[in-house]
Image 1 (cartoon, rainbow, N blue to C red):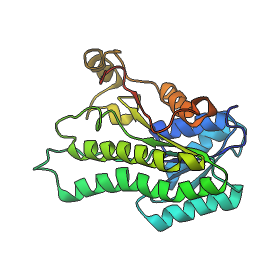
Image 2: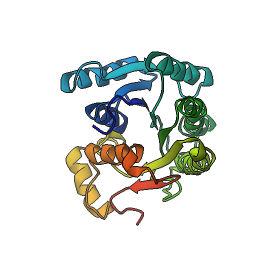
Image 3: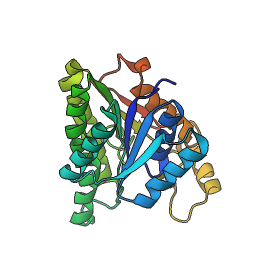
Amino acid sequence: MRFHDKVVLVTGGGSGIGRAVALGFAREGAQVVVTGRGREALEQTVKLADADIEGGRVTALTADVTDSASVAALVGGIVGRYGRLDVAVNNAGVLATGKVADQPEEDFARVLDVNLTGVFLSMKHEIPAMVAGGGGAIVNFSSQIGAHKRLPGFGAYAASKAAVTALTRTAALEYIGQGVRINAFSPGSHDTTMSMRPGETEADRAERMKGQVPAGRVGSLDEATGTVLWLASADAGYVVGADIVADGGSTA
């Protein structure tokens, strides 16, 4: 129960690792707010929490991380309801593929808007709330693709995630003196739909991973959740401005 009665925000909490992380915080006693643009997906996260954990541990609020006013209202609503914000996991992200000369400009702009500007705007409003409450911890989702690895066809995504790493480290230096500890988490292929190729089955993916990842498999949602919760916890109190890569050795 490392997060007993802590107030936690998880962006992109309606699916994948974001949903798993939200449930993980709730199991350890946190009051969790999941946010995203799709109400139905967020409500499913709430239902899963209610079925598995003491009721009321997870609530859903819709917001658009690319809109400053929307994020400000989200954070203001959390502070108004709970009195503070202790932890934020900025996980919301999108993927669009295509070679640089072939990629539509609107796709490139959208990836940077959500993946990078979304993290910037989230921190812009989360940090003052944490400072006012005496401190907190932020975990920004980066990726193995970016500062650590590049792949053809992933230029926009790599650029956005490399920038998230740089932004995270800069913000970490700026605010640790005010009690806000900021780090990045860079996952590789995990057990989510994003790791699946079009038309691929889980068995197909498992076979592909044997030759693609040194660990021979995708990461589990429990493994990703454990890493994020550790980064946000007092156990990682001396970890500041780090970018923790969890990719089964792909970038070792």
